[in-house]
Image (cartoon, rainbow, N blue to C red; front, side, top):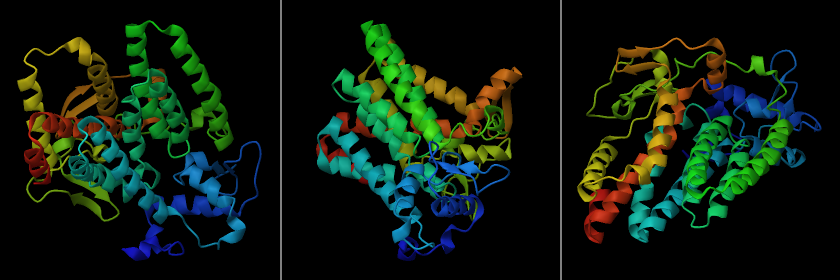
Length: 379
């Protein structure tokens, strides 16, 4: 409701992980500025404290409003504004992405509603504030659609750096996408110096920024957490309507029943499309294979490999379908330790989720007449 947009109302924030994010912001706002690690938050947390980079306070907003702390009361919070911003950008950027390929304003407007009403977007709003910034993934797609090779990768370098100012999971996702697409571009163009220059620029900006925000304040071994292989994706997640928010387990469908999972942690891999989107995706795949009887694997190899890589990272070494385990591998402890940075690995399905969402909308736009495709999408 509108009351939640009240910047002095904190009642709706005080639950579960959201409480820690709110308290982290309050302690950070009331602390002095510290240099060179301006994100250090020593008064909040155990022992030596914490940093804004290691909590869900959305660091770039925390920095902006901390600079205004003498003009705002102690009860001020910006999380309602952040949600408003996320809804706006989720809708507007997806509109721009669809319009770029269809050149149809009305179709793009209807298509953008699917992104704005995405279950995985709504589900995170009730759990982790910072992870509502999924528009960053869609913006990355939009940048990669740029006709200029230099802008395509330069814009995404700066987006990767900006993502550290929101949440590190977005940084990992965008870095994987960048790495795969840059590799295929290098294989195709043989432009080693071009990509070497881009990587140097990325490292030069990214690591000092992460240091300043406080990503390296805690020893590496202390940032490795339990969860990889537990907080993961179930292979039936796209059609499983069972999610979890502050009200507990919630069904996102009146028609599809809850599909039991093998582990309780697979709730973190919630990726339900919704019946409308499932039907659109099936129809989109049908149109794709109908139009392209002989699929050029080489043409789509970069996207296929990217999807496979993100999917493997999401399902981890313990592959489950429903409540049945298909594969359970033992990982080398050092390899497992490195993967524990992505302990809630089910989230790495999000780029695939939005890619398939756009794919179905795009395929329908290319195979149906203007009025028919808008009616179909609206229904």
